[in-house]
Each structure stands twice: as C-alpha cells, then as structure tokens.
Image 1 (cartoon, rainbow over the protein chains, first blue to last red):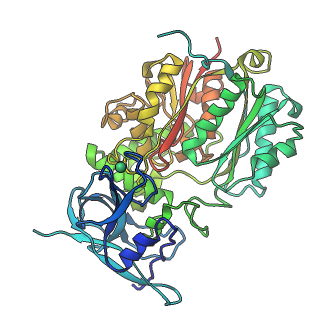
Image 2 (image 1 turned 180 degrees about the vertical axis):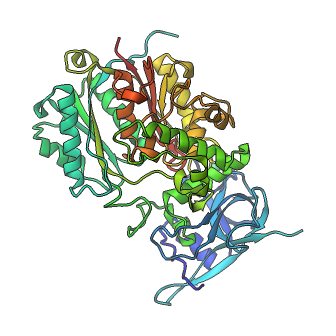
Image 3 (image 1 turned 45 degrees about the horizontal axis):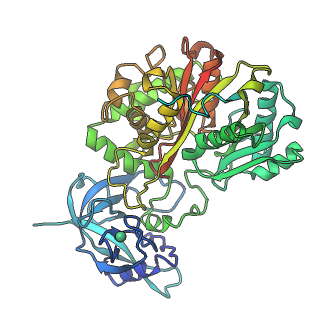
Length: 142
Length: 389
Ligand SMILES: [Zn+2]
C-alpha cells in the first residue's frame, strides 16, 4: 500500500513546529514565565497570560490516550484499516497529539495507557519539491 | 436564592416548523429555510411582517441569515445572528434570540437550521475541502478528519475509563429506534435488535454504523417572542426557562486532559440555577446525539446519573418509552433525522404541548434540550423549556 499522506497545511503560528518535525525534531512551545507547555503554539500563555515563550525539546515519551481504527473510507483515498492514535505527552497531562501508529494497522497492539515513543514518517509533496514529515508513534520498550 | 432570574420564562416558543426529511431535497438551503419558517409562522398564527429578527447556526454549508431576512421582506432587521458553529451551538442560537427578545432588542425572531446534509455538503467528508480550522492541520495528515473519527477517538477514551461496552452503545440506538417507530417523520422506521446493531458494519472503531447519526436534507425553524405576546397567539406557549453556554476546552486548548467529560458538565449547574430547577424536574430530555456515547456522557454531565453510570440508566429502561426520563423521543439524530439540533428542539415543543401522539411522555411539563456537549468544539449550550400553565 503506497498512498501518500496529505501534506500538512501550515499557518504562520505552526510553520516552525512543522519545520522541526520535518528535521525529525520534536519540540513544543513553553511559557518563559510559568513554564507551562502549550501545543499548538499560540502567542499567549493560557495559564498565566504571558506573551514570552520559546521552543523547547520534548522527551518524545508519552502514553496512549485513545485510538481509532478506520474501517470506512469516507470518500477519501486512504488505506483500510488504518489506525490513528492520540498520545498524551509525558511532559504534561493536557498535551494530547494525534499521530500515526507504526505498529499494527488494525490497532490490536494498542491499549489506553500504553507507553509510546515518538518517531517520524517522511512524506513527499505532490511536486516533490520539499520535504515533509509527520508523527509516527511506536511502543516504548524498557 | 435571591429571587427569580430576570430571564426565566420571559420568552416563549410560539411556533415550530419543519420541512420534509429526505436524502435529496432537490431545493436550495434557502428554500428549505423559508419553507420551515413559513410553517413555523403558520403554526404560531403570525405573518412574515411580524418578524423582526433572524438567527441561524451553520458551518459554511447553508444560506446566510441576511439572505433569509431579505427573502422574508423584513424591512428593518432588529436582531441578526449568523453563528459559525456546529451542533454545539444549536441551543445557543435560540438562547441568544430569546435573550434579545427579553432585552427588548427585537419582538419576534425566527431561528432555523437548514441543510442539505446528504445531497449537498456532507459532514462525512465526501468531496469536501477541509473545514476552516487552523487545528485541522494536526489531524488531516493522519486521515483523521471527519466527525465519526473525532467522536470515535473521544468515545473510546470514555468507554475505556468506565468500562462501557458496545452493547451499552447499542441500547442507546435501540431505545431511540423504538421511539422512531412511533414517529411518522422518522427516516429510520424499522425496528432495531441488538443483533442488528452488533452485526452492523464497523465504520471507525469503536463505532458501528448504528452508532452514527443520519445525514438528512431538511430545515427546522422556531419562532421566539415574548411570553406575553405568545399567550395571544394560536398555540400553547412553550416558555424558555433558561439558556446557558459553557465549556471551551478542545484537544488544542491545553486543558482537555480528561476525555470522559464535556463542557456540558460546566454549563449544567448554571442552566439549572437559572431555571430554578434541578435534574429531577426534567420530564423529557432531547440530548444531542451525533453518536451514541454522547447520550451516556450527557446523562452524566447533566446530573441524571453519576459519572460512569449513564449506561446503567439506559439499561434499566429509564430513558425509553414509559421510563422516568424518556430521551430523544423522536428518535434523535440517530433515527429521526439530522437537523443539527433543531429537530430536538421541535420535538421538545411537541412533547410540552402534548402533541407527540403515541410517543408522548405522559404529563411532560419540563424539557431539557441540548447541543453537542462540546466534545469536539469545546463550548456547548442547552435550554430548559416548560409548558405554560
Ligand atoms: Zn505562562
């Protein structure tokens, strides 16, 4: 099965995050005043109202919060079955990121609370003129 | 308690109107809206010239409120609301209109939802561009875009936390189908067994076909006016006892760490306080049901059951015909049709007028009508309605 993933459509708040992902770097915006992480990047801290923040590297560790297994195509071209995971990052309980699953396509190897580690999947654009990547999670051993 | 809430029972639903429900209306969303509004005005005994306000919610899939106002011939639009939002806003459109009437901004406001949800712009995603959301970029590369997928993601987390089974979801679908068999308008009339439910095809795990709402071409409209004026009109008024909006956290807000509750839990205390009521006062509940787990979630978040106990309430038959709290007495979005929350409101009005025929809740005086509980959109909204004495 070789169906290309849709290229992420970035905006001016997200383009740096996607650029990091394309370099296989996993970062998150963090408030410089109260140290609360926030994802996606926004200009203000929802916890303290500070406008000062910076990108910081994440451990890449998390746990499975939920997952779905696509069994119906909804009119789009994508592989069936395919699994999408929702990962709770180790850094903070309210950081929940959708991503691909590098394990079984039908998700039989998944459970809520399973320890996972981030990975990356490179995707080509339609024109082949730029490099992109998306998140691809896998089980974390040991 | 420092006395009556200033908004309580000041306004009323004076009329309701529905188009036919179909899979292919063959007409524009403008024509659907106008047909439903005309029917609602006829129901109330009002003329188009009585209307001085318009309100709708939509997600870029229906005609603008201004065009409806122009078509009705309203010379001076005193209240205009064209709310961007899905089912989470369905009760708030009406709540805002009622508050505007109570504040004297307008005298007679029509509220509607009009969609060609099967023949036109399908929520399920066939042939449509990604919705206008800066958050979608984080989902669409994983083929994670449509409402069934989004609700399945949260639904599994809820099911996992409380041990909710497929059979528990099935009982929601079956109970609502039983009501639908008593509703001539319902698009799904055939009885549904647990075997039928369990054997229906998987759409997106953990959801089967019958966990998912229908897609319908239809419009539903209601007329809001002052209680005083409604009492001079054709129908027994249905009073707006309270309206509330609340919640706000989504996956993208940093704050949504618990996927097993919703914005409904936040707005519910305000909603009941403003009506000077409690959950035990509700005789019939029309709960937004895009997908089966939303019914269980709302039974809990609105205080009818403890967290994790919604499924037990359904299994005991409490939410079925003749139960202590009939839920989605028209069949809901799962079996009557999908009019993005407005058909729930129209059903509540029928119940409170005693016009619901064989599916009537005996002695229904107070109804809860909810929007999508904010599982995806963050915010939610709801209304408490009561029959005029
Ligand atoms: Zn901060």
